Length: 427
Ligand code: CTP
Image 1: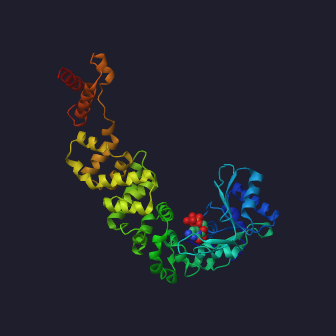
Image 2: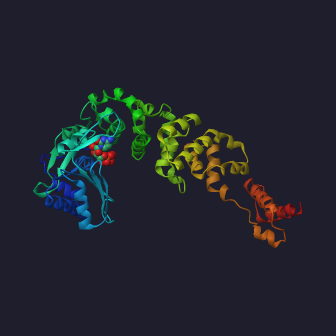
């Protein structure tokens, strides 16, 4: 990751260059409105970090020294769209009218200070300055801000040593209690470290062991969300490996493992996804490939800890059952395989087919997905009716037998099917 920062602490030119005219127009418009309301306005966090690293994100996190909800509402009056507000945190999300090149929403944050009464709980908040707001954040590299209102447009604010750490490629917490306040930051530290090829500062790394036991105080939703974010990353496998090494996966649940065979299955499975039509979503597939060899009772334990949504839960359970049993399909007739596989959700069959190494079992799943499940006899119920057969259970028996014969290679031509049909009708 190359770092490119000029000595100039006004980044307006770089900011303008990084944005389309619609995007900079949008920021200008918020800046004008906040200047009119007399509210200092900053773009902060990931956007500024990535801008300095030469990436162009669309994550507009705007901090206002004052009432961000009022500013977001003023934007709706000016441009339309809608706003949702969170009064507890004094934040708002503005959804501008949809337009190409514009972010779907902009976050408006009233600068605040936070204090944590209990580890891993939600903090108590009070209005504050930009510095207060930056001081409550996770890592120094996320504390850079660019002022947007008035003549100060593009002015870089580096209150907490973020620039130096960004330049040196260091992930550093701002204070020793940071992980105790919010143990999701353990996962976030690894995500930034691996994403950018940075190092976690030794003093920060030294805080990990003390914070690991606090992970179990986090709600299912918060931990799952952080792991979901990991699974969306390009370097997901490196991140999971590192999370395992640091004891973070075990801190979430002891059965969450990452080893060489998990890694092979995960990376090869995801890399082969384009060979499957209508595959599961990336996130579902990533979870499923990861957890496919976890024994059922452990999988249920992980599910109790993380509360997967019901579709993913069903996929995980079905895929792990099929994966455990897939080898036994290799010596069964195709019709028997179809009989078994049709009871398994299709997405689970797809996931397991991506997970298995080349061999007979994988061939069976591929044949099922690509061909066998679509095999039907040429004869239809309508044909049987035309032949004067009274509708009833016989139809199912005859059409089923014809299908089995096609699947198992006993029929090769339509003429052979007609012969078999005659025999079945007479039987
Ligand atoms: N933040 C934090 N502690 C958390 C989550 C977020 O302090 N547990 C702060 C970070 O400083 C971050 C900001 O809130 O910069 C916004 O969070 P998010 O959008 O998740 O982070 P980004 O910096 O935009 O990172 P990413 O590139 O991963 O989206």
